[in-house]
Length: 174
Image (cartoon, rainbow, N blue to C red; front, side, top):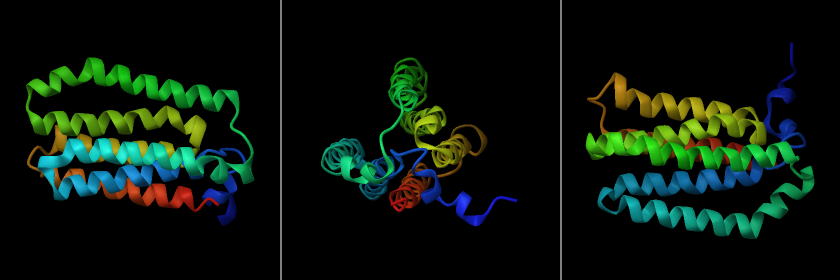
């Protein structure tokens, strides 16, 4: 039976040195998403703003957050950038269908695509990213395909809160 320490994110940090920086990015995006639920008419602006803040935070803090754990491997970097490329491809080819179905479908599909691109990122960021991706896909997928009566704003809020929680735990891998 594995020890409790083996399941703690801190024990993953040497194997996945980008965990704290990735957590910072995810938590900031989560805050932007939650604020977007409070101001739905400014949702796109708030997403872009959160992205800019998250990138600036990474530029300022990523080196310090990763320093205690070493450098990521080439494979981890390939999976990081490959996952981002996958996300771009999925948005390019998948979103037109959902945009035609309306804003609700397009918004939930975008959340699903983001969750989906976290699955291969687990190679770079560890098991929490895989779990995060599955939880996000289940949340947005429930609204898209299983329970269309679920509120878009409620699902949007849930997505943001999930990202804040997972991101905060990953930051605490310090």
